[in-house]
Length: 239
Image (cartoon, rainbow, N blue to C red):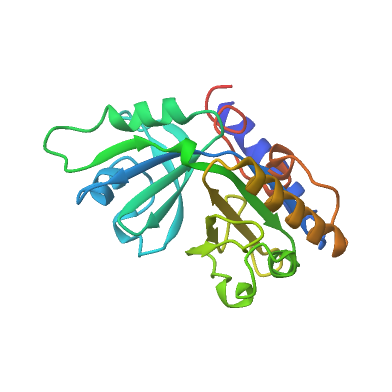
């Protein structure tokens, strides 16, 4: 019964994903971010994830389900290889629980340090639709070099935001909502806790999307469902 319910939910999500229109949509969320540093960071995280974290290249981005000691799925996360650290992006509001889960598996022999750095990032902006790239380039959030900065799916680049916006960010060639040639997507993870910067990025991206015929700003939860992104406590796991 459980698997049947999951299958039905995932079928509904897939149907909604196929119905996303060509016009761009923008939504923001505040991910829970756990940081891993130290020589053993890949090996340690690999042992708790379903994906091959050991093979994650520099600036690489992968989805991974996280498993507990009994093999039960805990969450679906994004893993980012950001220079000398790994960043794990999880559901909003779960930063302390996410940190505690990973930290309890660290043994004295593991040369890895785990930290909750959710407060180091203000928001992650998801841009979805055929014109997702145009939203980024026309919004001027990334400044004049934007066309050369757009990364491919599965990779990330560190960018400086435009002078009138300020700050820096990680730009993903495919965000947490996935994407394809028919429905590209990008995500912009803005660093810092500057409310003025956050407001400027929101206004610029939403304005650019509207100018390209996009709909009004939507909630991340609504866009997540439309794009078929399952989440623990909703489409799988305990509610």
